[in-house]
Length: 271
Image (cartoon, one colour):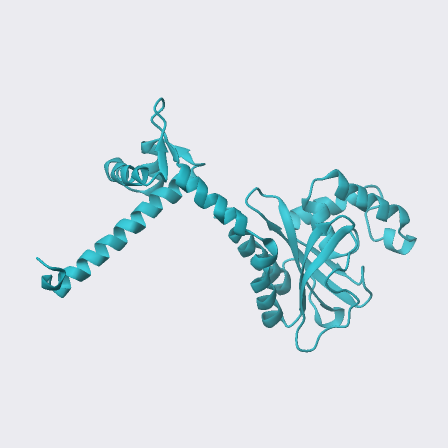
C-alpha cells in the first residue's frame, strides 16, 4: 500500500503515535538525567511513571542511538556518548551575557527601570550589559563600570554567593578604606559575615541610597550548571519611585528573571 492509499484518519493516528513515542523517549532520557545520569530500570520506571517493560523498550532504542549505555556489572543505565556530546554543545552555548539579554529587556519594559548584567572581573563586579527605559535615571555607571562590593546591590550578591578568597579580600579592602558614615550601615561586630548571611537568606540584595545617593537597587544571582554564580541581574531607579524591599514587586521580578536565566544556563529548575 502506498502512502497515498492510507486513509487520512489513519495517517493522523500514525503521526500522533510517533509524537507520543518521541515524547515518552524524551521523558525517559530526561528522567535518567534528573536521577544523576545513572539509575536502575526500576528506579527510572518509577521516576517517569511508566512500567519497567515499557521503559526497557525505550531504553533499547536509546541505546541503539548511543544516547544511553548500560553497565555490564550493575545493569544500571547511564547517559551515553551521544548524550554527552549534546550536553557539551549546550554548555558551550550557555553564555550568561547572551542568556541574560532578553531578561534585561523584559525587566526594563515591565518595570520601566534601568537594568544591567554584571560579571566578576579582576577589579570587582563589572557591568557588561546595560538597558535603560525611555526616561532613564541619571547615574554615572555604564558598560565597563566597576561597582562596589559592599555598597552596591550587585556587589553584595557576589559577596553573598561567591565563596572565593579573592571576593572576600576585595570586600575587606573596601571596608578598611570606607568612611565612618558608610561603615555604620553594616553590623559593627561582623560587617561582612552578617551581610553575607542576610543576602543568602533573602536570595537577593537590595540597597537604598548607599552606593549612589538618591538611587536604590535590587540584584539577584545567575547560577550556571555547576551552581556557580556567573553573573548578577540588577534593577535600579530613583529612590522616590523605586521599591527596593526584598520581597517587593521589583525584587520578585528580578529574582524570577534570574531564576529563569539560570535554568537556561543549566541550573536545575526549582520544584
